[in-house]
Image 1 (tube, one colour):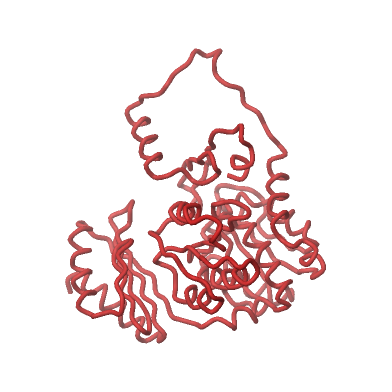
Image 2 (cartoon, helix red, strand yellow):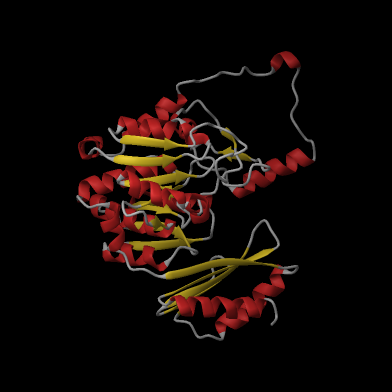
Length: 374
């Protein structure tokens, strides 16, 4: 994506990726002329052309040439380095554990860390689409072993990527798992204070900690539908006022670099944040309020019917605010509930977050009971 963005002569791009999905999956991601993911309407048009077999064909000797551009990854690393304070980071002399999970970052993230003068321990750096070491999605269950490693090695942090490395999930120096919304909250607070730009863009599914952190820094959160391309498009639309954007899954979008999620960029930005604030990652994490969030899903035959049932239930709770950008989100003084339909599967997704773990568990059971007609 960075290559397409940087080279004006490149019209578009194609990425072969199944992202965080298991090894039996694969996919094609279309890259737009500005390096962002192609809009959904463009993807639908391409799918329509494909399934109608309405291709533009040429004679065999009119097919374009294939060029192997081996310097692309160097350009990418230089791009990341160009938007952080490399001197401050190098002087800090970080000790980092990076788990690339047999994925696309097997070369780029370790080299980036080395260029930033870090003492790097790299795990699972043999590229292999079968993902023999762990499943590619960096959920806590898939990467929890990093907690012990970071403590045993005395590292500043550990970080893990998904298959195509557009996400980065961290463990702090105490071995604690840093959820994606907490990563976005920390970085938002830092970037707002560093740049003076006030707006942070994130989907309605992001936790309260993001808004708390942004407001404490004098900023404002703009919510979107779920989906990183939607977040990126909103950031482009809002222009220079945007400090940063991202999702609760560890996907960070940093405008000075490019308008898409980028795991290596997230690593470099975290290193700059630690270096410039003079605080450990654990200290920055401890500064944030902690909430209890539960994410689950229900398989349904009629999404429209289930969403009507969910809306009737949530409207009856007399919430402080209702957000209907994507499904329906009921906001209360001590938490929120989001019910939204999946765009690709016969699934209703449920997000519940409250100050109390007990209340979060009780509420999610109530919502699931309503959806299941119990």
